[in-house]
Amino acid sequence: MSKENNILVCDDDETLCYLLKEQLLEEGFAVQTVYDGKDAIESVKSKNYDVLLLDLNMKEVSGEEVLKFVTGYTSSLQVIILTAQSDIKKAINCIKLGAYDFISKPYDFEDLILTINRAIEHKNLLVKTTILEEQINKNIHSKIIGSSKEIQKIITLANKSAQSESNVLIEGETGTGKELLAEYVHRNSLRKDKPFVVINCASLPDQLIESELFGHEKGAFTDAKSAKQGLVEIADGGTLFLDEIGEMSITLQPKILRFLESGEYRRIGGVSNLTSDVRVIGATNRNLLDETESKNFRRDLLFRLNVITLTLPPLRERKGDILQLANHFLEVKSPIRSPKRLSSAAEILLSNYTFPGNVRELDHIIERAIIFASDDTIKPEDLNLPSSDKKDQSTDATSEHTEIVSMEEIEKKHIENALNYFKWDRAKTAYKLGISIKTLYSKIKKYSLTQ
Ligand SMILES: Nc1ncnc2c1ncn2[C@@H]1O[C@H](COP(=O)(O)OP(=O)(O)OP(=O)(O)O)[C@@H](O)[C@H]1O
Ligand SMILES: [Mg+2]
Image (cartoon, rainbow, N blue to C red; front, side, top):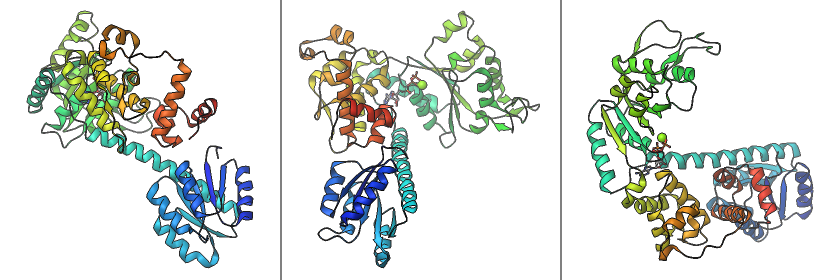
């Protein structure tokens, strides 16, 4: 068990608290003890604990009252009731109220440790699930934002192509929304109730792409211990999105071409021809016509694919969408209770920025700014735009004095803001910052950060 897990013990029996603390410290937990319910509630408010060991019979504020407070306050803190044999009924009632488990006194230490470890595992799973749910919800509700005439034109074309069965090629710089648009076409087509299957042609070596796409028979190659369905089979009736198709090797291209022409394919190691009915949407950030000139991409494959071509303009060419998108990301990503807004100087700065990473970059800039901002208003310095761009584009309103600080200062502030944002939930903070919880702890120590 790692040292990072925090346990709060609340029992009016001070000797028991002392003993438990000694034992738990030896097991590598961080432990704090309190002797009445009121202090337990205060401690829960001021620090993120993983587990609360809670006595039921305390004088002023009872264990049950503490439990009720905790379950209303947080869903991640796991409460284990410590109870006398005579109070088992009460303890069972506590489980109904949301306690994780109970242990009867005198407790068996091994039993207790086991229960604590299970409670921590449960908590970690809960946190992970919440994060996943957030991601899923975000994707389900993703819609194409933008009222510029450029994006509206693309949406009109996308709607038209959704009604047809032709293959589609989506062109655009990185982060312009190619995958989002592909999904949009699928969702608005007659195939919407069938799968939308994505394969990224740049992320896998040739043979793997082929076996992912078309599947393989048992024994087709050393690792093929059993037969496997290909994605084209899974996508049957739906849409297959070939992302970064410009990266597909010239040797694999004829197989894709054959499939596009006839709907036929063979599993690797297979002898019979199979068929699947999929509509293909390809996406690329390259100019495929140029690629055909340099013989990196087959001309016949390009013409099969680009029956309809949708070209997403870079964000700097549809400046009208920048603030609308920024406000959309602010709305989606701000904490519910403290929605953030952009200062007018920040708005001007964003409107003049060139966004080499397009919409994805804007999304990340806003996400970071929400964490950086010390109050509800996002200021130019919270946006942390690359300095050359800031300088090139600066206007009177944006030339607010920005003090140059060291990288360490930036890191400290960034971590501190992230911790505050997640109410010092270290697991969530570390996850969001993309660092291990261990690294987060060493940074907290290094910068002497406190709640
Ligand atoms: N018009 C838009 N409205 C709302 N969100 C958008 C829009 N365009 C892009 N996004 C968001 O920006 C991010 C990048 O979009 P997406 O992955 O579709 O881009 P891409 O062109 O496929 O990027 P890459 O070339 O890097 O694969 C996603 O989170 C997407 O939801
Ligand atoms: Mg993409």
